[in-house]
Length: 382
Image 1 (cartoon, rainbow, N blue to C red):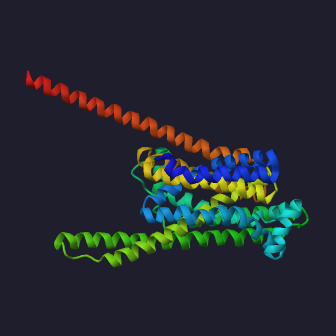
Image 2: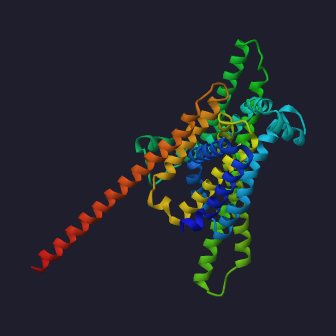
Image 3: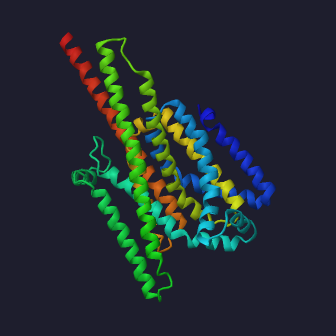
């Protein structure tokens, strides 16, 4: 099972490390290894959240996620995306941007750093909306009940998450504007950039999330209707219609997953510049890490880990909230990569431990119930 799920990841790791040695020697090998670990640690929460969505999709779309999705994640976000943002921010063609990345690495890194406010605002708002919609939803299982119960009550207010997200974005933009004014207006257009990028992130979430939710609901309605018809008459059924709806639902959920992965990868791409500004080593290291995130997602789905450890999804969404806050804060202030990488692992680790304790408590309770039942049988027999 492990080899089947992680086989491609192991193969890509071997090829990537060999390529790193051929390109940059043992120094390149070390850099790629560190970047791979960085990407996995930063994106573990991504895998948990992805698994919650992917388990609704059939085996075909899970395979699409692992093939086409990997191409988008590895080559799109980890290789093409850094080049695109440099091309846009520096107003140059993609070929010139690639040449700059290979020949003038310091200048290339500077362009990426200059583009960070727009990237952080877009990704921060997208992830913030995911977090807010999660904590404002009333759930049967609650991890931090003292916090989640009152938030679930507040969540009954329409559009609350959108209002809060816009307020956070407005505060972020005003903070940037105030800082620019205090420093002579050297970054006067930065606040406008943050606002536009943040609104774009919010719109992207609403459009993609809304479409995937719409088709998912349509699919559930169709399946329920077909079930009722089959109960009434076994010959009735519309498999073609069901497959078409399933395709639309799965497609938009797949699209949602890709945008989600892109938002998660922002911090990994930006954080990678703290280790190297070599685009080749960066693509190799982050690409290897992205493969493991993909495989881990499928592993969680197939093993049913989210059903066994019920608080994992909670921990992952709290990690999303923390990452959203970090991205928005880094628009103006620097935060060490160690904090960014460790906070998600800590939150997910805590939720996993809470899940283990819950399972043990439930098992002990079932054991006590079984024991008391045996005693009842014995006493009644006597």
